[in-house]
Length: 199
Image (cartoon, rainbow, N blue to C red; front, top):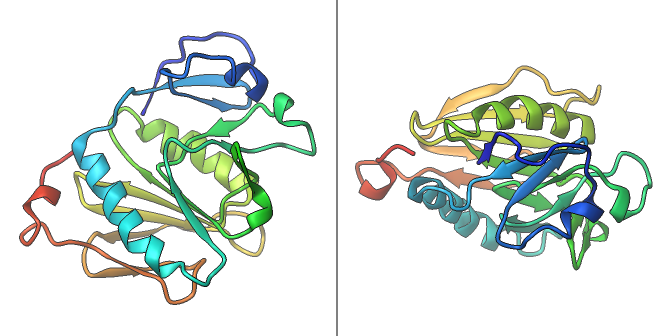
C-alpha cells in the first residue's frame, strides 16, 4: 500500500532495478510511491482466495494469473525497459497475451487487474491507478473493499474509456468479463469467520 514518496525526482525502470530488494516501490509517470512492507492478513485472505479460484479456471484459456510482488511495466511508446517510467505491482493481474510476459514480469497492460483497498492505498488505487489503467487499456479493473465487502468494477468501453462503474456487494458470484465462463464465488462471512474481519 503506497505512502508518501520518499524519493524525489523523476525515475525510470532502470533506476528502479538498482534500488534495494527489501524495499517495494511503484513508479507512475516517473514519480516513486513507497509500498508498505507487508499487507494485512485480510488483504492476503482475499488475494489467496481469488488466486485459488482463478488459477484452475484459466486452464486452456491462454491466460495466466499473477499476484504481487510482480512487476508490470507500462511503456508509453516503444521505449526500452530502462527508460520506462511506469512500473506497478497490482495485487492480482491476469494476462492473456503471452508475448507480454518475460523474465522480468509483464510489459504492457494486463487484461484484468484486481486491487485490494486499504485506507492507505485508497487514493492511489481509486484515482492514480484507475486513470493509468484506463489510459493503458486494462480491459477490466476491480477495486475490492474488504471492510465494507463491496466490489467496484470498471470495464473498458469501445471508446477506450471506463464507463460507469458496476458496484456490487461481495456475495453470491461475480462474472469476469475478460474470461468466458469465469465466475468468482464470494465466501460468506458467516461460513468463513476469517473473512469477516476488516482490513
